[in-house]
Image 1 (tube, rainbow, N blue to C red):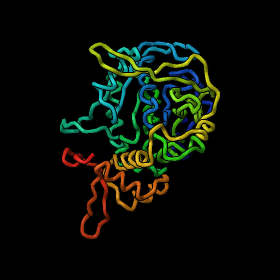
Image 2 (image 1 turned 60 degrees about the horizontal axis):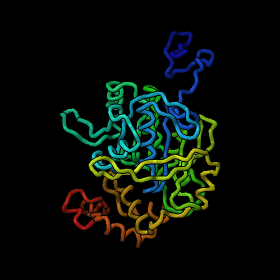
Image 3 (image 1 turned 135 degrees about the horizontal axis):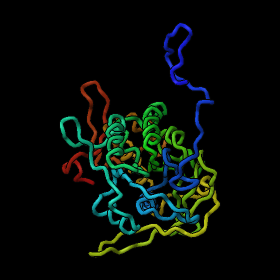
Image 4 (image 1 turned 90 degrees about the vertical axis):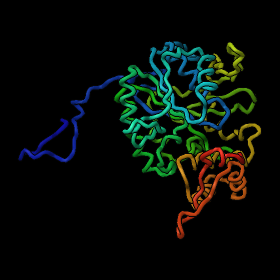
Length: 357
């Protein structure tokens, strides 16, 4: 029972239930065996391999009530909310959705949150989940929420601290369960040439621990244009198969060039760990590019001390001279925090700062 009391009628400082009072219910699937509604999932991979095109494909299927690739199961039609900190809505996101065949009336993008004074500001997971809950209630039947990338919305939370990430993601999971929405958090992989896929997801292991399912996007080493979509973990379904796809160019009216996912018709059985063991950095990706991505991610939530930058760069496998080159390439500024404070690094915040990019 929810609020048990002892024999003296004193309310206990906790709640609990007997399992005989818990009603069993089936999992409600968004994509049968892969992504469940009411749960948080992860999608990880290096930049440029098609993670956002995959979420555009998913948004198209959900918004139209289309069929999923390979098994051709029909998706129950619903609304979609997109968070995007890296791509422009007008020249990138909408064209990709159009190319994928999405019902644009059923897809929404969160531009900003209005504070108590009506001033717009970026969404912050620490403070704004209640506002997001109100948005879900207003739109109604939100089947899919894509947060791309999750690290851009942590509100200053250190993405490498397990306890902090768990404290942030637990309310997100509660929100997913409350509204019956599948939440897909997009993230990157840390630098490295292989190894266990689960350990390659950037930031704290709490990201993967909190997710009920996690998937990897990686290049097929036997076919340069082929990409693999592979399960890293799946705690809610028994489907351990992966999928393969290519990214094909697509021309929209008014000569707008974009791309879309073309899924293959057969499942693939290679494991994420095997794919990572044989993987290399994306074509043309240098140590400098990897360091730039690392630095952009680390500084995305605000200034960080140079000591912390150096420590986390070492942990991620980046040579310090390469990080310093990345600092210069990105136009990262450094300043001393008071007379006795540490040196802080920050990303450029205006056109003047960015002139060296």
